[in-house]
Length: 173
Image 1: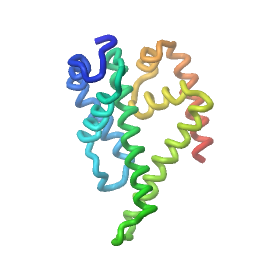
Image 2: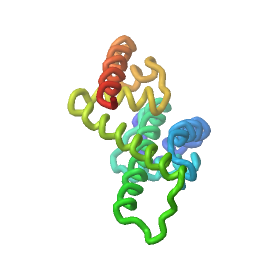
Image 3: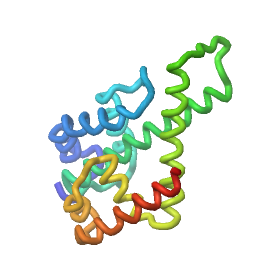
Image 4: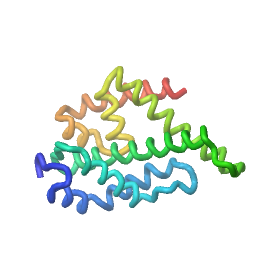
């Protein structure tokens, strides 16, 4: 499956093989979202896969790489949904329901966007650190799996992960 193109039979086979794992990752990512989010884990996996299929020239080098790409794409889908939600709040509908759940919803949407903004800033400092955060935090990959994807040592991954965590903690406080 090395070097398989997005949308190819090999990539589709990877999706089928990793589907339940990706659904679990999607559920984990959705856990931090607002109540009543319009996406279910299956829908998030499917949306991510459609986006991956739409990327021309995308090359997938195996299970771990596909899992990392899919997880990053799921996060992008959630960020896009949060941004759209914020845009809707700037142009509110004529009927607005105010209650305790809306405060929770607003806070969770803001958290998604704050993390995304922090990752964008970190990318200006160290793009590798961002890739490691995405794979470690959003995908749950081990340091060894990340090292395999990035073709580096797990020791370097640990060092970058520690740096990224400290940087993000400081940025988000």
